[in-house]
Image (tube, rainbow, N blue to C red; front, side, top):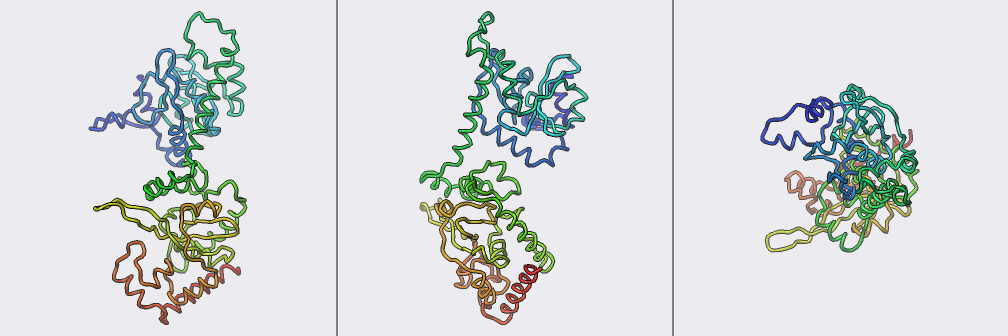
Length: 412
C-alpha cells in the first residue's frame, strides 16, 4: 500500500479528484472520530504555528509538521518528528513501534486513545492505527529528556560525516541540546505574543474584530491561542483563580433563569462575544460585589477620505483589583485592561436595578440608550420606539419582574 493510500485508510478519507484535490489530498487528515476533540485539535494547530524553523537533516529533508502540502519524504523522519512535538506539548507520549508491513521501526504520538503521526500527517484513533503499526515501547512524556540524554537518538539525522568520531561532549549531548534549543525558541515565540506596548496597542485597534478578538484577549491574559479558542474563562496569572468558582455558580443560576423565564440563552462559556450587555448586567444584578462598568474600545477604521475614529461600545465588570469581562471570557488586572479599554460609567447593583425600573427588560448600554444614541449600529424603528417608552409603566413592570426573579434565585 502506498503512503497516500495508507493515509486515507487510517483516517477514513477518500482521494479527491476535484479542482482542489492537491489541497485536500495533502492536508493533515483527521479521522471523523477525532473531530469532537476541539481543544486537542486547536492545541496542535497552535503548537505547529509557534514552532521555530527546524534545521534540514543530512539528506536535506525539510523538517515540517504538515497541515497542508504533505510530502512523503518526511515519513522516514518519524522518530525526529515525534521527539520534537512531544517536547513542546506535554500531553503526548511517544510510541516506538513497528510497521507490520515493512518490519521497520516507526514512531508516533499518543494521547489517551488518539494517535497523531506527524510523519504521515494524520490524526486517528488507536484501534484503527494498530491494525498497521505494532507498539514496542511507550516513552512517557516526563521521561523524554532522560531518553534523549541516554540514547542521543536524534544525532543520526544530522551527522555530517560518516567517519566522524562521536566521542566529543557536543556529539554526546547533541540530541538534548537540539531539543532544548527548539523548546527555548518555541517559548520565545509564545512570549512574543503577550507583549503589550504602544505599537502593539495600535496594531490591536486595527484588527479588533478579527478572530474573535484573540489577540486582544491574549495580551490581557497571557494565554495560548488554543486556550482562548476553548470554552474556558482565561485568568491572568496574577489573579487568584478561586474567583472562577463564584462565577461558575452565578453563571449556572443566571443561565437557568433566563432560559426558563425568558427563553433566552445567556451562556457565560459559549458564544459570549457580542453579548456583553446581558452577561455583565445580569451578573451585576446577581452578585453586587461585581460592579457593572460600561464604556468602549477606541479604534480606527479606514474609510473613503481617510481614517475615522470609532468606538466599540462595551460592558464588563469590576471587583477588587481586577476586571471580569464575561463577553471576552477573561479576568485580568485593571491596570492592564485599561491600557486598551476606556471606562466611562460605573454602576452598583442598586443603581442597575433603578435603571432597569426605568428602561425595562432592555439589557443594553444604559447611558446611550437613555440618550437615544445608536448602540451597535442599531437603526431599527423598533429600537427608536423603545427609547420613547423610558419611564413608562410597562418598563417599570418589566424591570421589577427581572429584579424579583434574580433575587429569588440568589436566595435559594
